[in-house]
Image 1 (cartoon, helix red, strand yellow):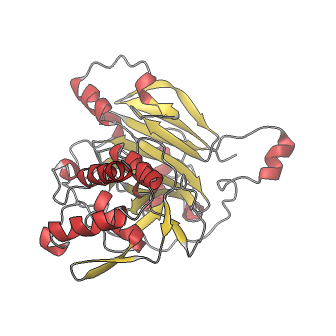
Image 2 (tube, rainbow, N blue to C red):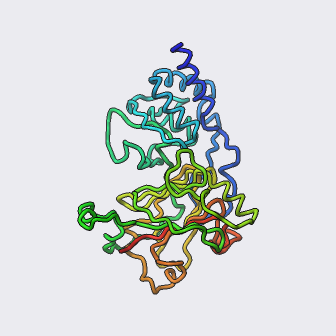
Image 3 (cartoon, rainbow, N blue to C red):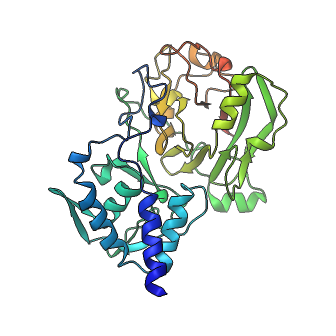
Length: 352
């Protein structure tokens, strides 16, 4: 009975592996190169990743050595595609596996099999803040939960160097100061828009991490599906349904990160992603499973003052990030303004 259950878990995990060849979902709307993420697709030739039989035998061999409860944790994460909250999967980090002519650590192999077949190096990854291993260094055990990781979004043209100015009021506030004031200050508010109409109230964010979603198992955060929208546009309704798991917005020591948890690209415009002197900021495309530092505290120090050209175009303040689901806008797209996008967010930072 023990072997039967373990073998069944292993078979279910193998059936839930990431497809070696993409089904086209990640490639929709890839026109326009300016400011897009690199590593746009997850397609990879099978000959480059080792034979299917070799990969299957190796994966089965490794999974059968993992404890049954750990297999259940991995299966929960993989089958829910990160939608269900799953604990860390702590496994030895120094176990190596060989696929074809390439050697991989145990975490890298699991990440390749269950999320990104085209993954080449651990430097392409960013650990999510929800992971217990976040910010910790453990040479013996490391979390191998594939959905506690994200791919780093690399900009095709890095911006020029920024001058540095004090921006302490945007960084995470001092905990003691908050206790003395007797209140928890919000670090940003989020507005949800459908085309030119704001839907619902402003959502005040106090926790360091926020899920913004339409339909998320065990979802806790800003649920767009619960908002009352009177927009009957077929395009708006179609995009709204594709938001799915949505995004995760996280305030971290170096800035504010956005993780795309949905099955479709999102599009981001932020003053710290480009040259602050530019009159036209690029809109950056972020593919499913990728993370991007949407707002950089240090780079924000070189932003021009609110009476300058770029800031006058922002709805409320210069310290704002705009995010559109599924549909892009700007110079690479037919929509020139974000207000023409079906479903989008405005993240407004508290600078007080």
